[in-house]
Image (cartoon, rainbow, N blue to C red; front, top):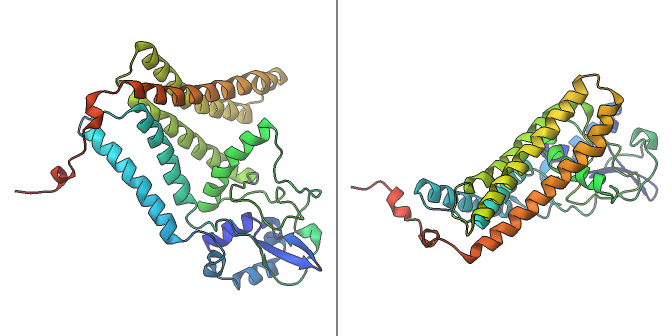
Length: 304
C-alpha cells in the first residue's frame, strides 16, 4: 500500500457495510484479516486522492508561498537587516506550516464519504471499544492530547509507525481533517522525540529577536523570558516523561507530575505564548528605520 493508503486507513476512510451500517476498517482489521488488504489493494492511491479537496498544485502553491516568506526572512538576517517581532512569530508558524504540509503531502484532505471495501466483516474485528459519536472529549486534557497527536500521528504514518485504531468510532462515516487517534505504544518513542524537536525548534525561532530593538527594556526582558519558556517547557516535559517511563518512581512523584508540573508547565507555556503575541503587536508602535529597507535580490545574482 502507498502512503496515501496508510493515511486513509488511519482516517477511517475504508469501511465495510452490513446493510445500512458502515464499520470503519482499522489497522487491527488489516492485521487480522489479510483478505481486507487485498480489497484495499484494488483501490489505487489516485482514486483516493480524487476524493481529496486538495491537489499537488494547491499544496505546492501554499508551500512555495510559505517558503518565499522564510527565504525573505533569512535574506534579511544575512544582510544584517532586522526582523520585527511580528515577523519572527510569523516565521515560527511558517516553520510549523512547512513541516505539517510536507508530512501531509500524501494525506487526503476533507474527504466527505468513505470507500466501501468487500463484503461485511465481523464487527468485533474492526473496532473494540463501545460506540461513540464524538472522536474526542471537550475537556482541556483531551484538547492537549489532540494537539499532540495531530502532528505526531501524521509523522508516525509518514515514517512507518502505527496508530491505535480504537479511537475511530464504530458508527462514524468520516473524521474531520484535524483528526488524530492515539499513538500505538511501539511508535510513542520516535513520536515523542519528533514532538520535542518540533516544539523546541518552534520556541527557539522566537529567540531570533533576542537582540532586536524594543521600545522599552521591560519589553525586551519579557520577550527573552517568554522565548526561553516556550523553548524549555517542552524539553522539561520530555525529560520528566522519560524519567517516569524508565525509572520506578514512587507514587508521590506521579502525583507531583500530574497535579503540579504538568498544570504549571501548561499554564506557563500558554501565558508565554500570549505575552509573545501581545508584545509583537505592541512593538509596532516604535519600529527602527531599517525594517523598511527592502532586500536587493539582484545582489545575489553573479555578475561582472
